[in-house]
Length: 353
Ligand code: SF4
Image 1 (cartoon, rainbow, N blue to C red):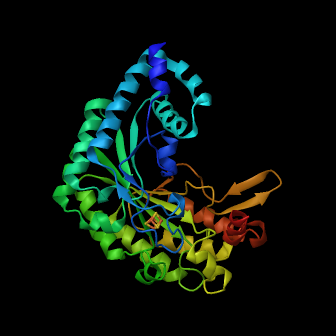
Image 2: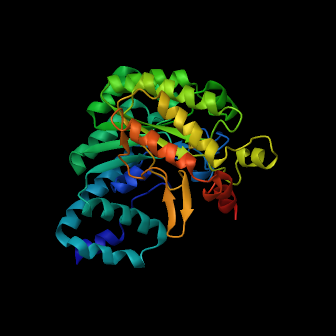
Image 3: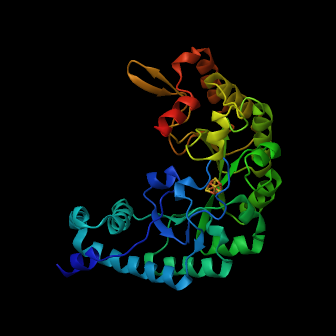
């Protein structure tokens, strides 16, 4: 079949990561930048991107790819599920691109994620042009999202954010990590909580949804209270649609992994993390969703397998409605013996093997 032959040589570049919630909804990945422009946060160090050099892809190059995606969609409408049979024979680079397209298309083609770590570094005119091309070639999406560094968001005016919103960009995933300025400074985040507050409010004014990330344990034993209280303050001021909790698991090859080894940073114990989470939740006064959609969030072992303290789904707990339920679950978890939990240190050692 000619269509299948054409799909065999289909080129679609995909970057290494996207938020789990975008994988859950089978978002089409569109790489408008490559890698992370900062790569200096002590806990991450740009490792998910192999510490590769950051670049912004050319507008024409990306638009050409979007046109190719549009053509591939026409072919898929003709050939249907047979296209899956192409995957095993393709070289790895091309297989990932086609696999992403097929998962997106056959799950309804509803959402799109702009890669990599900071799509807001693309000049606004250029990004609007790309989003308009997406609309023309792939039709209207239910949701278009990207990762945005808080600093890049802070630098965008409300007018620019409105233009991006009108062109289709509807949700930003922003790594706040901590609302405590000192924790962010120690972690070399290159960002202040106030910048997230101002940029985040502007994004909300422009009609965008925000998904803010919080790293449980990032203040260590020393600064957990300031970390939890500061984060609740920022969340309450911004009032994002989502707060997504990620537990700190030091990655081998990062400066933080080294600090933990040398005893310069003391990780929270499992009960310490739960107390930190309890304090955060007690202080939260926002009307969005608190989500624990990552396997590394607190869990304990039972003969039947691991059990997570809080549910892992992408929509999480709606506040203020579910606040008491979350506190009740954390309270129960604190009554369980600490030795039953898999600690962040245990996970970090596993990761290092
Ligand atoms: S946390 Fe984000 S900004 Fe920091 S190094 Fe990692 S990818 Fe880059």
